[in-house]
Image 1: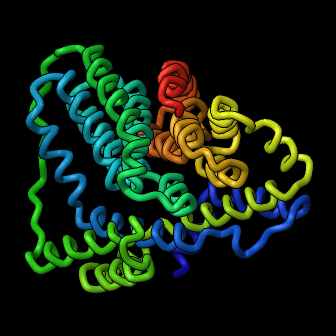
Image 2 (image 1 turned 180 degrees about the vertical axis):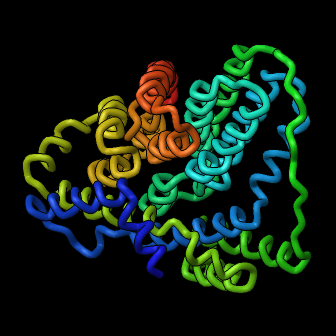
Length: 367
């Protein structure tokens, strides 16, 4: 318990959003309904499930196994980017970053990699890939819940952007050299058959809850029971800071939305699809795309430009997406040469290039 609390109160993102939440209460009011309980429970059940996968080493083993088959640097880059892109669809962009960045550093110990470039691109494609499924990122969970979207309706929104993103991924991989790489050690892995079946069943229940096909509290109970039966240590490893940060976001946007000046300004600003799109992108650059989605959803019934705006808005600044901040944190944990400024500069440059390209693509998809 003490370790968990220490981790929460050392989480700078949580502390920053907590301070903003307290500050926002001075200027605006908050209602209990501002906190979307369904989204919080869905996110918690998903994070518990992901923590089980992580603690068992399943994701790392799977990634390392595939990368072990690569013959050259271009193949390594392509596989890492594809893992980031497709992994984020089902295990969230945050988990894709937390899982794959350490693997990149593992590979780098044997083969010199352009680490900052590769991590920057991994983060970009984790953000883009996570946008394709309702469970890929917190803002999708929220938007599906808030607008009561059916699965087919969501995929009509997300698949066109997803296909274009995948095309750019393959083109991007061509920029890496075909320099040969040595074999990468892959540790042995084993899991009890009972645990495998239990984990598979729990995954199904959690996904059904996240997609609102069953009550979300059933998913939460299933994930809690699964963690208890497989590995109780999961309870300590769960990133509760993300849940509390998300609650802070709800408080912040609830208060901001009731400040008369901001309320009136947003009402005037979001008067057509193009302005909704650009307002979503700009807001994401400043307050991150999750709170931007929550705040702006209160002012429009037009989901398409809002979804595209907060998705593409996850590219750009370090604060545009929580996954971006996680990428920086992972880099700092693995590199001791004080090169964070270099990471910030190159990461931001690559992100803004993609942001400009995808703004053009997004305009074509607005309907």
